[in-house]
Length: 238
Ligand code: ATP
Image (tube, rainbow, N blue to C red; front, side, top):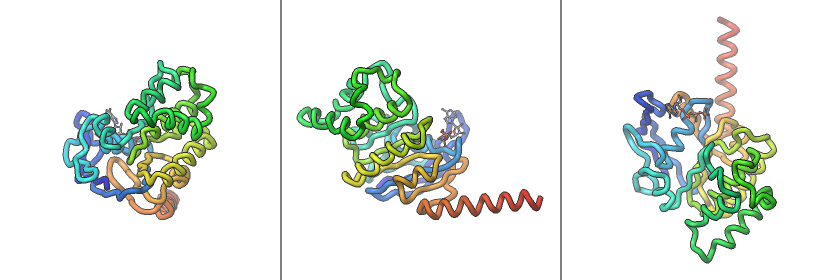
């Protein structure tokens, strides 16, 4: 289980997360949803040990999450940020090899083949530098590099950013298959509810650093539709 206890995160005194308390059972595919600036990235960073709490804490499997993310990676957690998630001046092959350093030597070749089987878009690009990839190719590489370590908990920040709906759905479909097969917990930050629902059944909705709703994504869809209807009727009557 991963749990937040009164989690507050501030940037130079400005509150980005305001006393969040929740639990996420494992294994689970869980969505962190909200509009721009709601605090999704900050929440993932706090869960990954990429930013410190100014109050409260995150606890994963009875141990406090601490900085940096590489320390959490040794405990089986992997954080894939929305940008700067590959080594830009290294080839696709070297990026995957760099991730495989965390894997026992005997398994590396098998995992490398696994990455190309599951992300076939990368197969013809092995010698291309990561900064010469398209957005979709780069996100595929970032997710593949995260998955070759076989994390028990994957924190994934908006893999759909800048991608076509088709490419986003392909990445999410691969994740869904792998997560089911490995019983892996995935916590996905996403703005697009329909896309998140392709992977996750449950999640929470953040607004200005607070949890406004938690439940199934079907319930969340209903909640957002009713709020929208309320605000448009208020506008109409105002
Ligand atoms: P988006 O969907 O646009 O990526 P988000 O929901 O991921 O947004 P965050 O990036 O977590 O939101 O930002 C939450 C709040 O914290 C915003 O008000 C943002 O401006 C602020 N913020 C984020 N990072 C920093 C930073 N490094 N320094 C100062 N303020 C920051």
